[in-house]
Image (tube, rainbow, N blue to C red):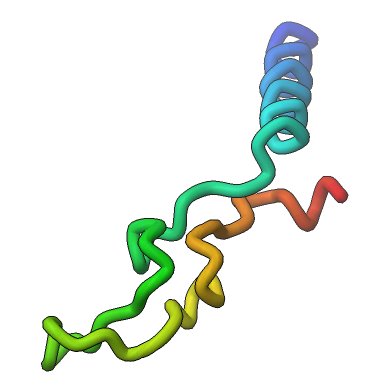
Amino acid sequence: MSIIILIVVVVVLGYYLSLRIHPTTRCKRCDSSTRHYDLVYSDRRRGTCPSCGGTGRQERFGTRFFR
């Protein structure tokens, strides 16, 4: 039982350190291009990506929890 707890602690600590080093990831919706294209008229740019706000980056899962 103590081995399982130790493994869980090591995994959580590793993920925490990974979040501290790299808190953001590429936006999956706009593929980090900072542009959002309409689904019907894909050749026209429709403004910034609503998912990332035009930055091309999104916070990773757990970033807000560990801060």
